[in-house]
Length: 368
Image (cartoon, rainbow, N blue to C red; front, side, top):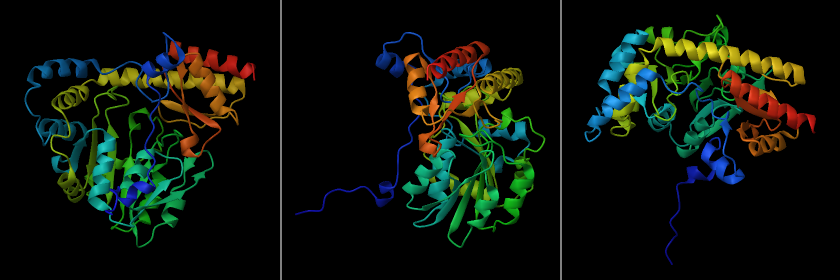
């Protein structure tokens, strides 16, 4: 008798990432015509108009393979952020870059330090490489505890992830806290600072991570994305800044043509759309205040957010509230997968969308 076909053992611990419910699925499941999605931290203004126009123009060349090195896009990023070209990488979303990092730097039984309540893709790719996750609890205020992360460093540690601001809590690590972590980090340990929501941050205490890259710090990689403030989540385009040695290692495992031609054109154009970025940030700031005011009035605890979403504590019946909102055509994100079972994460929408969400939520809470 032959042995049965069996997946590699890293998959034994892996739990697939479950995204927020799509609008069309909720319409079918609940028989609805009008559904509002506030679950996936998407830009309610849509995509950068300049990016959309660039994709339309690029579509005429869709029969040709894209530039596998994304040369023009990387040059645009180099100019926009004042970072040398050889310290820039791009991928099919930041998720793709996290996969490349895992493939390039992790071996069996290496250790990776992450927060217990942080972006789930870190966990998935660590398991896929048969490495070990070391999880730290949140600090007060639902913040990542970087001192606790530093305490976990040992001879097997290869990567420490700092999601800043953190998803799903929305909280921020300060420059002082990040510097303190880096001071305790051996050069052989890579610190990955995931800044998907960097453009949303108002605080003067936010770290200048790009200064670390410009200073040639060898063990820091900064990840960013076009999905949030630029409104290009459906295009899948992420980028990273790091030491040339790190970028080169990632390039060795990168899939051919990982960034398609339309995404490359859209990214170049989006970087030039400063007006859209300002509009998105201003709308998000106003929407955040709108949610805060309502949560205060309703007596709901929430985490101070530096992102385009707010983590709010509903209580033991959080899943029932999520279901009630779904039946009313509003999608929000339950937090059970992040060990925050009494919480939901609500993306910030337009003023009208926020008002609809709050009206439905208040109605559900008032009826117990």
